[in-house]
Image (cartoon, rainbow, N blue to C red; front, side, top):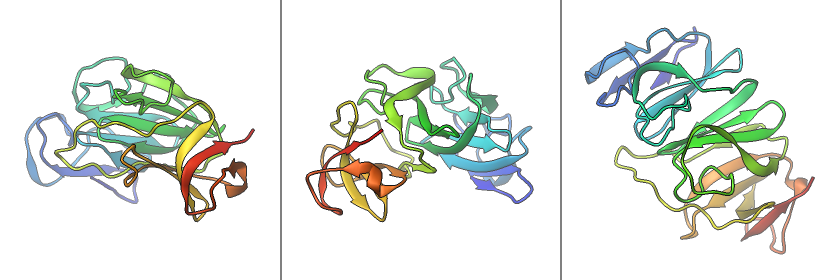
Length: 212
């Protein structure tokens, strides 16, 4: 998927779940324009869904929706963009394989979709088809990222955590959250490194507690 300088979005490839967003379920070997979408400032792609951020702070998504990753209040796939329910003031977006994450201008983080391993950070393992706020997280962040999933990606466990703590390592002012196997970054949150404290030094792995 690609974002052009004019704010339009173009996609190509497999389209079995409508992830090209052109109103069809037909694969395409050349770029097709995502239907009815303009004023886009950022895009992110999951395993079978795509999400976009518009200049007005709203979020739109299309493709596979089996876990609610489109955030529109349904579990219905969509071949055209649908607006994520009740979400505004968004400044950044990221997509995991089957879940989606957004950062609002007030520094809060909201997520929706697959939650079998606690990916949404709301203290449950219940999938959500509308955004829920990540519990206890407000770091004044400016960027959120998730790993780029492969087409064959499947839901997997997320890192051990507790309220007010992140398990991972600090590098270049990022706190990188890693999965329970301890080797693959799951989420990075960019902010002021002084907001984190831990018994381990920077670049070491441990539970990093964020302050108010």
